[in-house]
Image (cartoon, rainbow, N blue to C red):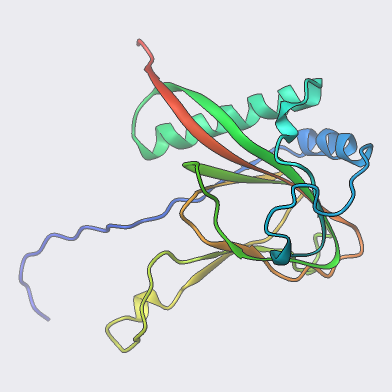
Length: 206
């Protein structure tokens, strides 16, 4: 084996962060179940969504206590994400420019898409049938190739699947294409989605 010296750099690494808050998910789910929803109320990309209902994109504009609690928790988690990947200790002004919820019935899917006009996106899984019933969020690799050989085996893991769990909160950068695979559960699959802009960074004095 060659003993040549070298420097390795790993570029184009894509972070996906997970948090958990089952208690908040349960309360937010109860709040949503009290609402009436009729089909794709957002009237956006209807052709990509099957057997699911979607609220308008201003869900977090409500003044209810549970909405404020949810926004505060999500914002604190996103600050942890940013401080981790940017190796700093800062506060941030975060804007939820779009927020909504999905109620997916049995055999629901949401075809491949990505989110615009934001830097970070999130999914908060509130209710699912959690035992091998599908409904995973599948992220497509941002690294594309049209050729594989023995020199490119490290690129073979092209998709990453996040299995839904009640109370799981997932953050991902907005450039990632993703989709919901076929959900086979009898209980409705209920999630909250949101798009964030980071408007300001404030250094914290130590």
